[in-house]
Every structure is written in C-alpha cells, then in structure tokens.
Image (cartoon, rainbow, N blue to C red; front, side):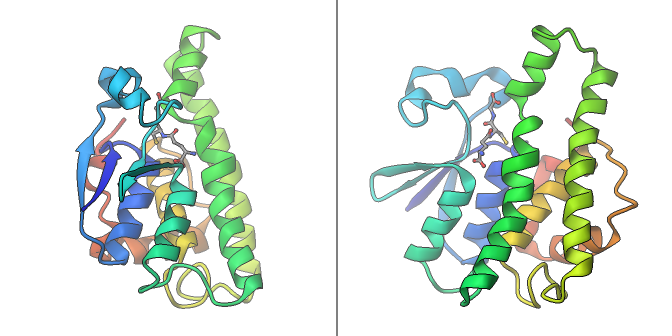
Length: 210
Ligand SMILES: N[C@@H](CCC(=O)N[C@@H](CS)C(=O)NCC(=O)O)C(=O)O
C-alpha cells in the first residue's frame, strides 16, 4: 500500500493527493502536524531531512517533492495520464506547474512565513502583503499564458486534466486562502473551479483558513 505523509493544510501534499485520486491509486495518509512541529522530529527527519511534506512511501522507498512524486506516479502508474503524449505539450504542462510550484509556493511556506516574522520582524498585515504579492505575480503570469495560448482548453492543456491542473488548483486554493485578489485571472480561476467540482480535487480542510 502506498503511504502519503501529508498535512491537511499543505498545498504540496494536496497536489500529490489529487494525482493519486485521479489515477485511482489506493493510498493511506499519515498526518505530519506542521503546526505542532512534527516535521522536525527525528523519525520524520529520517524520511525527509528537508522537514517538509509530502513524502511518498512506495515499495520501501521514500520520495520527496510533489512534482517529482507526481512524475514518478505517472511513470509507475501510467493509466489516467497526467502528461501529454508530445514533448512540446509536456514542456508546456511542466512550465505551468513550475510557475506555481517552484516560483510562487516556496515563498509562502510556513518556514518562510516564520522567518519573516521571527527574523525580519514583519507583522501579520505585512506578511499577508508579501504572500498576496507573490500569489498575484504568479497568477498574472499564469493568466497571460492560459488566455493567450491556443493549447488552453477547458483544462490548462487541452480538455483533459494534466499535472498543470493539479498544481494550478493548489495555487488558486492557496491564493484564496490568503485572500489574494484573483479578479484579473478569470481564465485561471474558471478552469480551476471546473477542476474543484471533481471529487479528486476535494481540498478538504484546506479552504478553512490559515
Ligand atoms: N517544493 C516542495 C514544497 C514542500 C513544502 O515546503 N511543504 C510545506 C507544506 S506545503 C511544508 O511541509 N513546510 C514545512 C515548513 O515550512 O516548516 C514540494 O512541492 O513538495
């Protein structure tokens, strides 16, 4: 049985959960309470010295980083593909995914937010401004790409759900959690809202505040 080490408030674990569900892969989830500091305990450090979720356990191996985990699932469980068959398509899907997962999300994770308050002295409104700024920048770039490019369909790439939709869903759910104004990203929010209507994209408690 595949095991996902995740947390209800983790956008990165949410991405892997969506991919597992879209591929109909049975898994069990162990919660790593990030709010209680469980990511720093020795037993979790042994799994991921980066002290972050998700970690995916499969066949005795432990994989980290949501995008490589999704790519691994794609290779090991090819049914219900999350990547296009053509190289250009795969590059576009990966680029959309990385705008959100590699360029925006790392700026708003708990360790960065904690550093901003503990080391830089930012108060809550200042931290929120920082978070909304980066979600806004990423959303503007995603909107421009999605609105301009002919490859965009009812989903981010064509009319079938890909890894791009998985990651864009986590981006929009996160942006809304931090009350980012997304009114200038109608293409992005419309396609994510179509995804969120599917059971595989259920964000669970993620929408319940931060
Ligand atoms: N790039 C990583 C991000 C992993 C990450 O930072 N996860 C967050 C939760 S979304 C975490 O566990 N943070 C712990 C902390 O910041 O202390 C991925 O996509 O898996």
